[in-house]
Amino acid sequence: MTKTAFITGATSGIGEATARILVNDGWNVIGMGRRKDRLIALGNDLGGAFHPIVGDMRDIDDLQRIVRQLPGSWAEVDLLVNNAGLAPPMDDFQDADLEANLNAMHTNMDGLVALTRALLPTLKERRGAIINLSSVAGSYPYRGGAVYGATKAFLTQFGLSLRSDLSGTGVRVTSIEPGMVETEFTLVRNGGDKAASDALYADMDPMTAEDIAATIHWVASLPPHLNINRLELMPTNQSFAGFAVHRDS
Image (cartoon, rainbow, N blue to C red):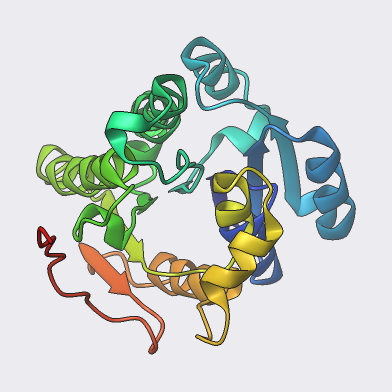
């Protein structure tokens, strides 16, 4: 039986790589994103096993409409990959643009909760799975990451508590929490400054979108009696920083 995955943020990075690896393994994939041209291009590559949907995680009413109007067998969703997300610029919170922070909160939390809730009846019926893309930023603070880290801590806790609510339904819930992954994410966060993005990943061999997609594929392919609660990944050259200490001179 062919399974169907619903992937948010499918136009680039981890979402796109996940769509590719699942389709190559025989899945049908619904890919949602804001950039229609990229969805069309991905659909041209993946063929009839890919169903593109233009959607914005900040538009809760539209997310609910999208779920209601999934056509035919595309409505039989077995896996939700909550991948879409963004981060505001890495300014100290007291100096940060409020709108950029609220935008991240609406995308990373509000829309994700609404979409998950809309798909849960189907996921329960099909004893499916939910994979949430959190981050090590939800566990380890860093300067400039107050709101982004908080949204990812929310996502991790949401997944753990959702597992409790879904006890006995057969629905699996996993939080995947990567460290440094070189994708468009940092380029967008830096306002398109490619030099700043390149400098962050220079000479440290970061993880790739394909690394995380392979991890998602592995979790999604596990037998239904096995649930991975949380999975934290870092590149070998990234480790835990010490506490920052400011000393008055």
